[in-house]
Image (cartoon, rainbow, N blue to C red; front, top):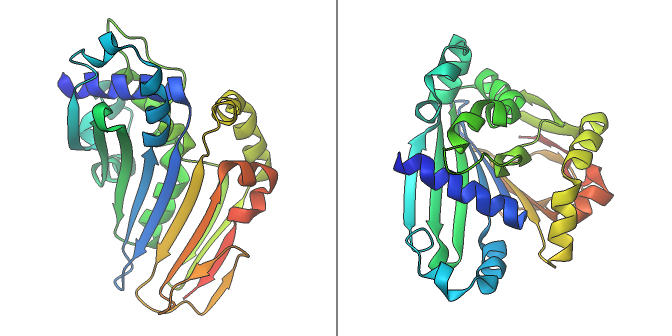
Length: 253
């Protein structure tokens, strides 16, 4: 199970570093479909970690492993999880892929979660259930092996369930649930403290692309493209912790 071994190694690295560059992209299309991508880039943190490793570790096969693989999310899950899924969950999982890129020699470790929604209903369901999909309840069975215990945290835990979405044919709204957000911060406090101690920033970027111009947007950090069909929000986790509302937005198009 080469893929499983790779995932174990990557997730162990994440637990050791605790630092990510997070990039969300939403590509809306004229037919109502939408492609969603969550990128978790650990490359900056890996570069710090690698500098601390002895040469003996850098010469091991595990360190020199290179991988660039795309795997359907449903196929990653064990049969025990498949049996607990309903038809909607199965369809959502089969419309999602996990992308794993790793080259420690080049300080590159990146994981992505990609999903294709056919309509507003599919997209709403996916965003509402993404955190559950990527929790250790589902991914846990494939993160452990006889030689390596499953980590208590994983990078996909940052696929938040503390946002509420209101999505329509011509609108995309997101607002934060402060009760859930405070619970999330408390559960991940050690990760945030570690990244700060290592002097590694955790950038957080959201890009939303539309098939037609944006007519109204409510967010003080919004950067609108020249053609008004794309908007970007860029901050970092430290700023989000101080002012959670900074990543709320209401977009009409």
